[in-house]
Length: 90
Ligand SMILES: [Zn+2]
Image 1 (spheres, rainbow, N blue to C red):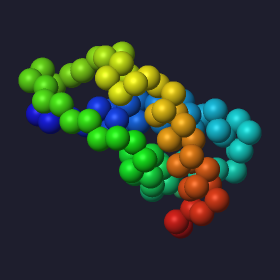
Image 2 (cartoon, rainbow, N blue to C red):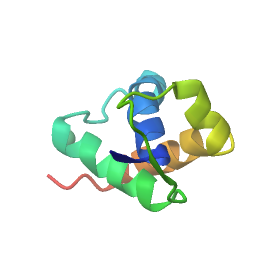
Image 3 (cartoon, helix red, strand yellow):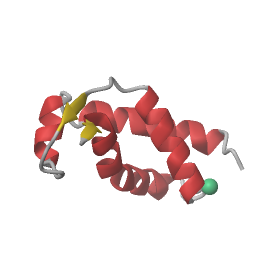
């Protein structure tokens, strides 16, 4: 199967980043629609890095090593959350 590393990283981190954001901004919506918008926005701002895996599961730590660390994923997610918070699409 083919996977995109940043996508796995975004799925892995969205809950954590969203929870932190909610502590200061309890009014943000975290429904499925908004979460998908956040993930799409974040992924559009991250480099694409496809790999082929035969095992079907991958180690999270290896992913962050491959894409240069957690920090840029968290930054992309935070920017996306702020955008969706300001301009929710529903
Ligand atoms: Zn929503």
